[in-house]
Length: 173
Image (cartoon, rainbow, N blue to C red; front, side, top):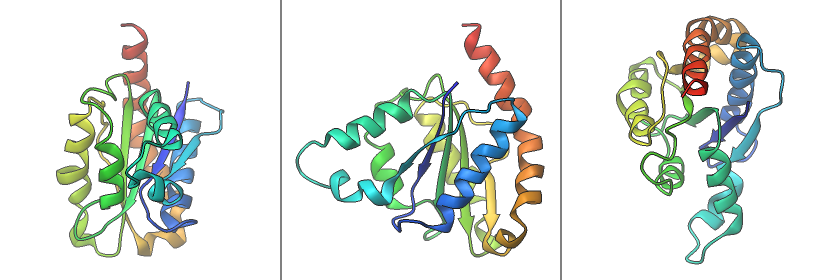
């Protein structure tokens, strides 16, 4: 099984990156997967993503994402939704590219007023790309970063059974 993380924060080494890795590892443990997730950090790809010429690095990242069994897609919340950097990357995937993928949206936010963004804005993007998206996505407040482990455990307890079921269903096709 392959677990891939896409981090849509334009800053390298961001808190979003750390949270995404920890969230992916928490879900992986719950579904019995011990492989280390692969990470696509868009902060490192940004110059190539917006370059006029094609980039083998960007294409390889898109292939990795499209081939994932489980995809954790994480972003800080900017203006009530995910980053433009993440949208620009995902827009390069053709429709249906995530048809065999279980995607887990994760937004890190400063204010609880943005909590619905993960379901209202982020989920539809992933569904449009064909992904199966368990409920709920993770809307993580910056104030929760100090006690991250229990927050991730509660969330993973809710979504891991859905992830496992979707993976079993996909394997039986």
